[in-house]
Image (cartoon, rainbow, N blue to C red; front, side, top):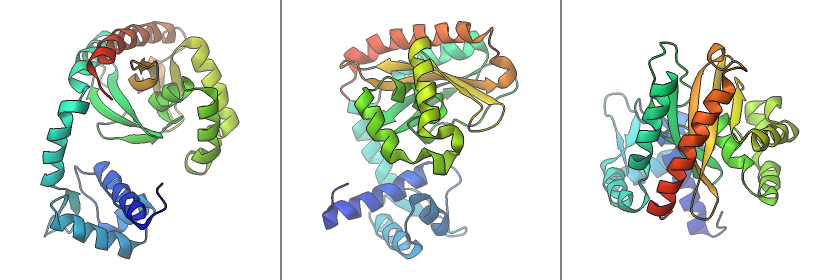
Length: 258
């Protein structure tokens, strides 16, 4: 992060807005946002007041809860001309959900995180709700984050695992050595498997979608209950994910300018 005062302020504002984006449907109180952003409550209160003055956040007068504001919508609409690739991904997500009956997703890498952009549920009645549109997870966490991390260069993986501190947030199953074991398996299989590491019994599988430079920029994911991801079915699901990821990568590689 930029060490200048301006850079410090931008980092704090970004942390608050990202925290709010994950709970925007229900909104959040000031104290909740302060905890999520890792900032003192008085600091977050001042930032939210300034952001509200500019229309970047909005506050419900009755509940006191904060929401993203109309100015961000307008900025997002302008930015979508360059960055929105979700319309290309929806067909792939739909085919995966229809073919498997599971919930299917499209996620994008944003720095050290993956962000879920598209979700479609299949017809199987039991679903996992670990992922949802707008959900963010660090690289190496959930199958989308694992598959993206797995296909980065070794030096980039080493640097990330050294700074990420996944164990303190997600437990021993996300210690560097455990993540490295899953990376090795992912590179062998071509797709990642999350065996219920975030929520017990909720499994996920993902395939990376590569950009024009050959970097893992996005991921397609399937999630569901453990009984739907038994060993005999995983190769079939993996093959479907890889086929859609390869086809989508060709489309995004020529269309996206990320």
